[in-house]
Length: 279
Image (cartoon, rainbow, N blue to C red):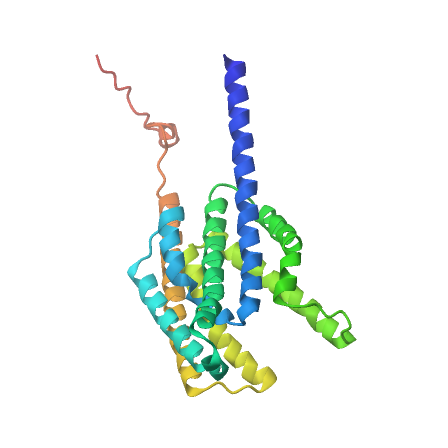
């Protein structure tokens, strides 16, 4: 009987490992496919609406609901992103038909859903013991697998100047570090907090665009970036406050820890406790 129980447990472990591998691959493929869909329409800003979907999927998958501060920050960030999106709208879209407009909007919205699912599932997998390095491995493999689909979005040009190749390599390392940092943050913080604070990329892009490329954003764009900054800052500071409170609580519980067994350390004080017997 013990042998059969051990075999069943081993089969369960194998099944769980296979499920983890499958989910990790699906998550990684979804993230790679997101980049392709963004490239098709060049409307990557739409993915910054993902906090709305993140909250819903977190409740369904990770069983983690938002608090009032996170909801407030989400509303502010989404409002700011909408303002930035309107300021960056291209007038050339006025010549498109209604069907073409719907299609150009569906691509980034689909990518937004995939993007949200990726990170929520990453948090779900991390809570079940799937290491970060495992997810990174399948993420890299999925990029190679989906490489043929990338030709649909853009045709490669291999005859580039040496300086351009250097920038591409730097961009690759920067994106890898961004992905690793984001994944590590999700392993240690709630998915909702990470996704909301991550939208600080919107105002950061405006600042770097002005400092490096000399691009001056419009008044509406700057206003949207300011609203995003306020919303993300509120959520980030609130998360820091909660983490600090939890740390202090853990330290207090550790300092006030009592022995598991009564009288375990009573001899140290010279007053052994009497035996309490019940009939």
